[in-house]
Image: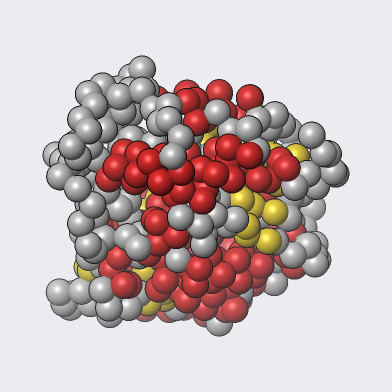
Length: 233
Length: 233
């Protein structure tokens, strides 16, 4: 593994995308400080997955910050009374959208980056998310970077922050191909919106469907552990 | 008090500035949902002050969200090993600067605003803070607003978010004059960086000095409860 003196903060959810992003950042020589946010999501299996992924890909450290977004609700992922859809990906922004989630997470990454003296932040948003979630679009990423470069003491002192979203133009299949080449063990990752405590996936939420379609498109075995598996989704 | 149908989220710290901002927003007819962030600051007296201020100025509600920024440290307000300066306001950005604090808080306000269907957010940053903290500058406020209007489902659906910083061009004295006219009880507010559990101010940190100088400039009695008071600061 290459090493440089450049530290970076990387948002690591424990899913397929952020694991691949970590592999890309490590390969580029960044010393990655990984941040997961325990925001009251439906399950915490992905936080365990994030820990394993960080360790196996050689990140410098992994921290989890707690922030209870239940206080606001407004999403199937933070409000137990809103069901996670399981009947297939629909047009429009799904109820699994968590209001301002990426803005909140990037803000926390920005805070940590400034304390660490890091000028680079990585986030694994991608072209598939783009179709549904507003805070995964390239325009949004650029606007956050602009704002961040006015927000901090570091920026005032001339340390320009770069926000990297290396997956943003890739399809799920392209992401998986890239990660495979970089040695990501996707069996460690959890993408499902409602995995059980052991990290077993439901197989039918949008995240499961997009993930499975990705493995099918690449033509490699899907290493996901499913609670139930139907070949007719 | 005027009432309109317009809800707003307002960041309320319990200090002089945010209390005045609340009075201004209420006077303009907004229904204010006040948000305080318990981010691991040195004391929680200001959270109690925020509650009293919200109630006495007639806010719709007041919520406190916990977020432990001790995990990152890097500020005298979130790291007990860094002392709060008490020898007078110095040039440059002080050690009481909390990395990316306003960005983190505004992100949380944005999340709640979206859930509430509110298109207005108020923050009490001002011209005095401007000299020291990068995330109190007008350019920063505009950049956050631009980013926020790309970040959310609400924005995608055409509900343009406005970020109001009504104190941004005012001096401390002007803020106090304005608040007095609107009936703010400044005796309820706590500005001190290291107040005790009863909300009594140290009298010598930058926040205490700026506040006291404001009351002196206006020529009204300072209602602050001090632990110690010296007339020779």
